[in-house]
Image (cartoon, rainbow, N blue to C red; front, side, top):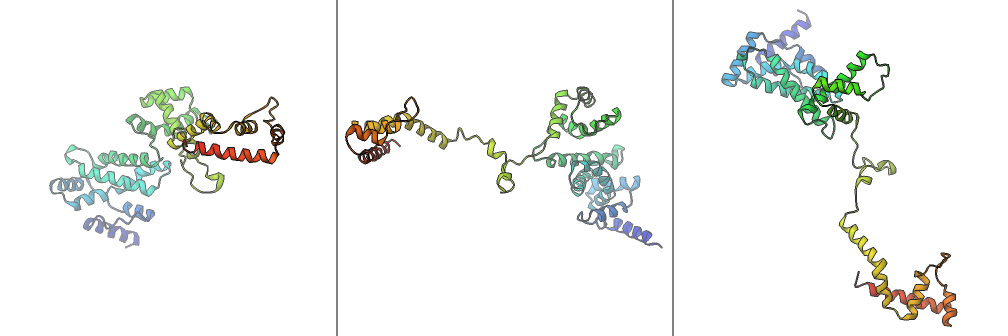
Length: 312
């Protein structure tokens, strides 16, 4: 007896005694696929028998035989969804969940084989997994959007090939292609355009993924609107008041000479934009030294700050 025949015999024997014993962990995908491909298919009579036992008594061994004998179907279906960039092992696992749901709900008296019934459940679970994990933000939520998501890309490629499109890098749809797709999928042309925009876009992290200076500049830096932030609003109001009523209040606390010195030094702008009078100009006018004018100015500024302190 050859090694292949011996291995097949061992697999068949294990599948009868313990259906799960022949299925290795998904950690080794090649070994998993190789093992399930050696599991014998059920005859229609065996499928009927196991299905009736499961529905009548909840026989887990019968359920195991039904599931294990159809695992290769899940692998076959999952391969069609590798183009979405998700791990094949994850697609298989989700498809297996759908297969188990199908086995649980399968009615042998409906006159159909389990393989035909299970395909819907397997695809449904894989579709749901892809929609949840393909992007951070869901791209399809309604029934029409789901139909578009899983058909738009393949139909676009088919249309290009059939038309012999020489521009293989063209990604946008023409008006005629939009109308054709909308009619074929029985959706509005606006929905085709919206899904095309969603599929052509990509995820962008809101916050920086590293701390490499300019490379860490992310949308959070320019999308945040601080205009209505309470602290900033209060600060802006305070600055506006100080620039108007606050200065007037502070100046009222000064004697006439101190007030004129402050106004000439800080608040006046001449026609030539040269500012107000200098310390020497004011010293000559009041008959004192420039240093004395500076001392009066410093004392006036301190008095103005004291006048504004209660208001602040």
